[in-house]
Length: 107
Image (cartoon, rainbow, N blue to C red; front, side, top):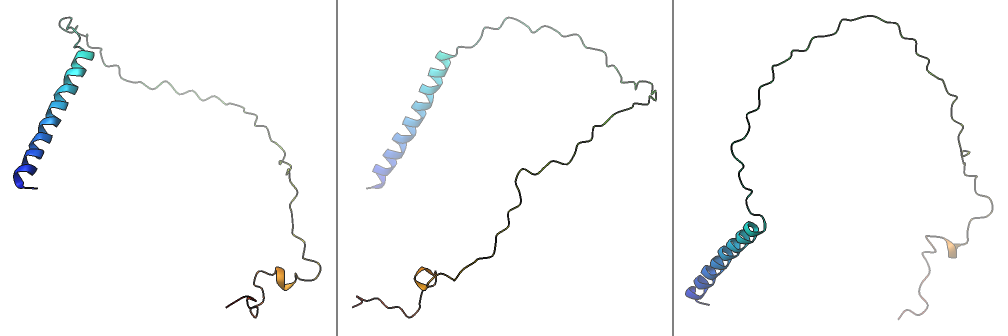
């Protein structure tokens, strides 16, 4: 590709992007036309600022009864593993196996 072909493709791409933006703008303007202005906004009267004054403190004794509950009963009994009984598993079922085994059909 020569420089003129690359330049023409870049310019054409920019033109297509600009046209796509104008098309999207036109579609949005036609779907959502501007709302008519009904005149000047009404003037809102200012509200006087009211300062906070703390109410007078009166000491009253409140008697509150807090219920006490018994400790919850455990729903499951604690499980303990029992020590293993019986002979250990044979070597064929052992994880490590026998290191001296060789394949019988090795070539």
